[in-house]
Image (cartoon, rainbow, N blue to C red; front, side, top):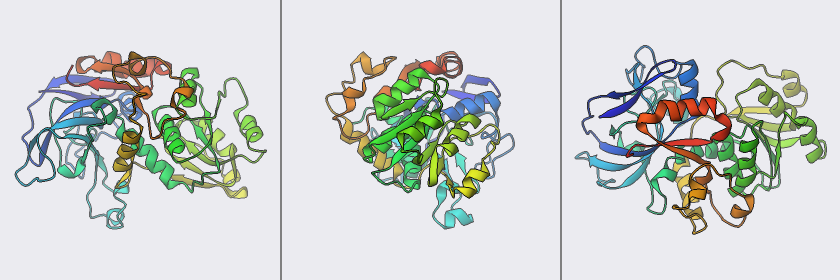
Length: 378
């Protein structure tokens, strides 16, 4: 079967590998999203992908990529009763040992040996078939198309990040960085009832997406003094909650400076280089800084419920306006409930094109794309 495997920095290949033998459950992937962490690995790795055998999975380079994906159950193990052949699912990709101190506290997303389907195991969504333990398969209702199902994982990251914050509905929230995770957080904030959402983004097109998906203000720090504008919009106080999603020093500086006294910053982004933190602002203004990693139990299900509630006739699957390239109007979504993530899909490609039209497109044409999906069946 085909599998997109990471062999090293800037080296991914569509390899022919042996088809896995079904254990607990075999899934045929349908759509796989390319993630910022995939790009970080491609450009600067291996970092997440292990060079030596991983302590949990015992796997190492080369590894099959793909951790944001939906699919259809093709085969089930003899002891599996909760799934049948033909069921549609999304896959929760984090792996954990269940025995470390964090896992014993029930915080499995912070496992000391955390591993991932699509990074630190030979299983990955960018393949014709994949075998996963049934506990990693989350049912996808018929009302949600499989391409939208591939967006559940990044939306679950956003759901968890928002859940980590002390959010109140009357607060002003700042989102720094309107990439896929920042845009997902904006959508989650909207369904949580937040009506004052400020986004800071250098890309004009991603700023337009932010407005369309729920932001009330978008500030481009290339054109304006973002911190000054944030203070002007908040009575000179600053935002109550900030989500740092840029992974850039300038973005982190804006997040801290734009946060009010005793406000809370949630760091969601991954960093290639260790940033500098303004500890004077943190100490003397008693600002809170917390992290958000992956997702808790129940986050996937909560996101699926919210997507299902937003799957209305306003959203025709066949309409090319929603499929590729066009930035939607904010008015189009103002009266629709739930999460409507389809506008995030800016391209669909075949597996054979994953390098040129996937990874390289996200690197060289970053402003044109939010989420590129790989259609495994194409």
